[in-house]
Length: 206
Image: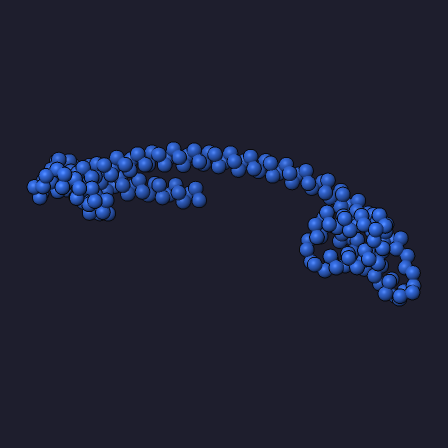
């Protein structure tokens, strides 16, 4: 039961809508459910058990005085009201502050991801176009094909891992006379670093 349910049960008893015996039975039934209980209800449980013992000892015809139970129930209701007034505002304030902080962090993270993602995408597109051009040129130079067939085949070969990088590297060093270190940097190191950077940033943002 929630604190509101416990309070409704206490109100029904203290307002005269439930007899002491009916209140006792409902209280013990709710207690046996085993859910978390407010401190005021835990203190009231002792009085309810004592009243139950008095009822059992009195038998069916005996009248049991419930003054002690009523006084304890009144204190329990006051304790529930006090707990609700003390915990509810702080919880609401915490939720608002936490929500604002989470939104701020999400906004900053999203901006960083978008900015870095755009930069990586531009670099990757540039490398892809350069690799397609160099692979197509290598095919045209080595097989004597015309431009269109070379470009068509080169477009697909450029995206084959290792093969596309290697053919572009060979064209850069053999046909265009690039330094070996520069060709290796552009067609091997740069793609690897771009992929590694994007992967590491993605893992940190998870």
